[in-house]
Image 1: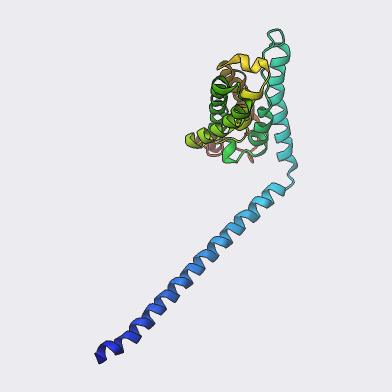
Image 2: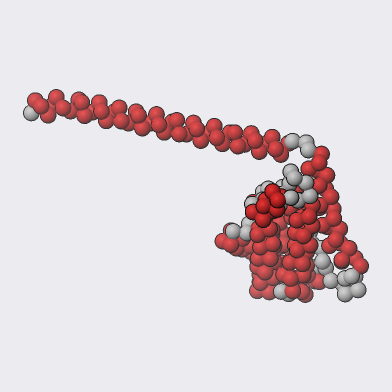
Length: 221
């Protein structure tokens, strides 16, 4: 009995030491994570607020040429058929594809996949429940978000592409599933081709971000 009683204070003290040691480690880990998050946030803010005239020039030129190409096609080639080739969500995509080229949301997979999947979802919703506008509009956007998340093609302007299929003019709605191919896919391909040119002209810009082929080509050049 005496040995057991004499052992208990030692056991309690060792438990307390273990608990204190574990809590100290937890505090140090949390402190490291907070410091790391702070450094990342500081770096992002610095990069976003950094005034780089060359970067702004190429962003301007790339987006100008990309949107201009689509607008020219609609103006001079599709005017007689009254088809629509330029949609509003392309403007939002240009911000990412030309202005935030290193963002995961701006990469080709997200850019093309996000628009195409969202367009398909929007047309389906329009055909199924288009007569109930108050249901169709939010349903198209919400379903497009979930589908992009599932396919790992999240691209914020894709939500607008889905919404346009529902709230667009009669010309848009009359296209049916052709809306997915033109104007959506065809317009995306034009913007992507322009981005591949203007986002890789200088050595400071590379698009797509993790393109091994471009990196090898630049080392060889």
